[in-house]
Image 1 (cartoon, rainbow, N blue to C red):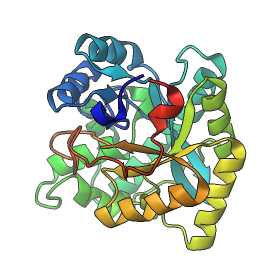
Image 2: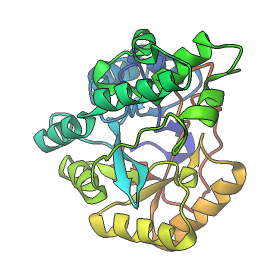
Image 3: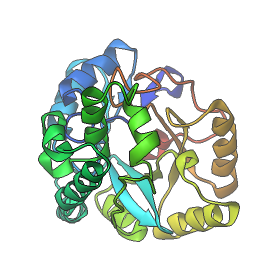
Length: 285
């Protein structure tokens, strides 16, 4: 087991296997270069980068946790559940992720049609050069294309989301993802730990948040991200209190996607509050 005092963890980031801009091995090198000692690649609904991520991480001297980020629909919103330490050959997990990925192409074409009606034709074909894995074409790939194709309209990728692709936006198309209990079940069945990703991003009221945390815990979920690139410093404090209140393990990760787009680079976040139990203790790394 690694001494916690020596751990610099980043347990949430993405590669070209989903919606990141760098290949898994490149993300691994970037993490190591920035002092990360415990790392996980957590691509959306996909395990395709795990073997090379582990090989590269271990060659660079990092401890590696296999990972995935599963898209879930709960109370009419998309929630992301990170699975850490999963067996990437687990059949139920593999099949569950395949079912979750199904339908992305049809959704992407529907978004492209909406964008065409809004005066931006050809977005589906335009986004394809930005897609590393066609099964995982997403809003992020559309946003990268649109930011490049219409610089007079959008200063960056986030501006595309803010104007057109945010939940409920003019070009948004909803998607029904996995059930919360199914995603947690796949992760637990594969020997991993389920963690609610960036809870501060979800637009729930207090009662709904209580429902989410209780449902997650009842399903066998064990952790939440406290320190993450999607949280403000005030939210670090807010969700540290949630972890204490519910007895959740605490996780941390930059949610890195791209050097140009991400608010935080790999390994750049502060440490978890000292009184919380980090998720890696449960995994005995």
